[in-house]
Length: 261
Image (tube, rainbow, N blue to C red):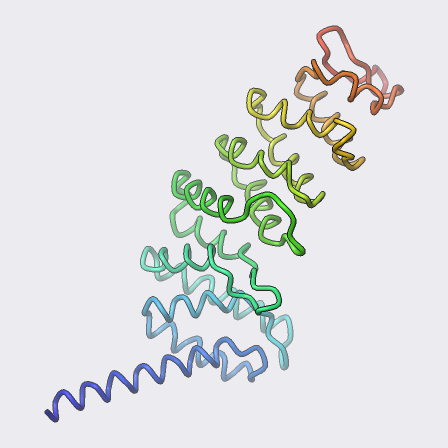
């Protein structure tokens, strides 16, 4: 009985220690020395819960002594520490990316660093990264959000991460309520020569009922001109928006720049 009692006490102490270190590591107001000690303890613990706790360090900006310099140092250390865990950290990293760990008033936390971490953990495996992006896009559908930070971070990552499968995955964001999301989507799609998938959804943005922004119209005009894509079926919407001193439409409904423009 004494053996089992001792084992239970040991496990209980370890649990209490983990919970304390999680509280301190994720407290933005404690002294940096205290938070560093807790972060080191979580690294040494190495359990899935400890790894997830380390990842949650990306969800806040530390206050107090050291300011932003200390905050950046801690996050850089966490990034490298998670990398050092290797494949062991993959399940928790994916869970963190798909979760909402921010405060109740704004639960969607930043995932930009975690996305970069994930691609490093999977050694830039295109299929694994695409599978994660599929889950992210499915969980963050087009529509209205007061603060679409997660969509912005998905699209910022996709602007850097090249995969032709992204055209079909991302085109739905052209219907998003937020103009910045639509513009970022246009930028992502224009990186590819996938006319079959991209042409019509992009041209739909010229329709008057879309009441689209000037910068999106200008980016589309430049993109269609550079790629030589036809605007057939949409010429009546596009032509009034062209700068006649810079662009003209040729037979075949393609936009070209005028000489000297």
